[in-house]
Image (cartoon, rainbow over all chains, first blue to last red; front, side, top):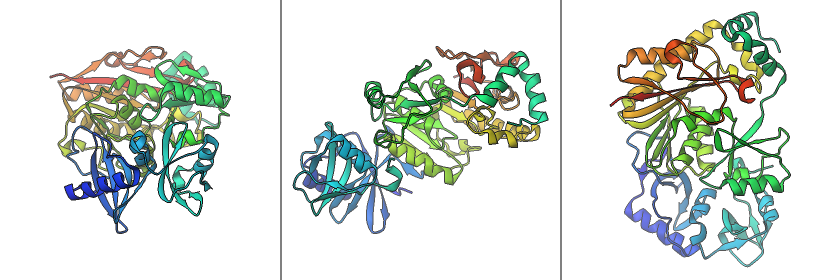
Length: 146
Length: 299
């Protein structure tokens, strides 16, 4: 259960990580909430106009994980960063993207290392991990298609 | 398909001349497959292109601009589904949120939300602004709700695991409340005939008791001038008209409001006080059975 609104310090750390990795700022109009999970921060993005005044089991969308200054976005986190991202964006064809969503690793089309954002047909769709000349699949199994 | 003597005699009395066609649909006609374009992540043109590219014939659902009927054989477990472009949702079940008519910037409560088809439909209608509180009192069903909130990008939505009966004790008021109540689910028998095995008058009456509690709690959560939509996917008077009559009798400021939903063939509620409600049988639109009522809280 998300426990708290992200502190100003945490927000600065998140902004810094996103800027460093993807060359963009945080998406506007969002409040960020966090929950500690296995020694890293699970970050949630909430666009609601009022802060919920009742205990909640989940808020907004899971934006990504922040771990020691490195930000790993979720699928929706990657999509929210979207067009603003100018660094570590890897463009692939739609059939490669489909292969990725089936849970497979795919060929890395250009040099990159670490967490990248996958782009296809002009849209950022998901995160991946560039390693050893491959884009390693980091999608949760629940988000794999057939 | 075996309907049981009690089920048959109850529905013969209830439906009269509509009974034979009703049974024929339950027995021999599986539900049409449909999806709803999720406008938080995509748009109608993009999803229509996706369907065309895959050679999937589709038709618009008349009462929901984002609804598309597709063939039963359409393979929809695709990247686009996981990207949240659409929600596989039964067509009649798109109607309650159309009746609720959520507006951007509003506070909306979906009291019995899991697994989230209507929640995400509400979130899309509010254009990701305002706030949607999606409650379900079953913790294991919250996981499915959260999965769909995430996949559909419903960033203005909060999932809550509280008792639906007594929700007014959370001391939060809403512009609109949806109660898509747990019910005997006769309307889903076309896709899930198993529901008929558990049908009994005794069960219907127990569900009716629960539903009256739910809708009373929901009404207490409304702001003055707010509106509540009560819906079920079942047929019994006890779970539908009687629940609304009970609500109207308990609250002087509750008023049944007319429902206008273009292209959605239906009949009126079956009792004198519930004529403004909407009752749908499978033969009306080739969908599940549904019941929808809209109640406003007079200021």
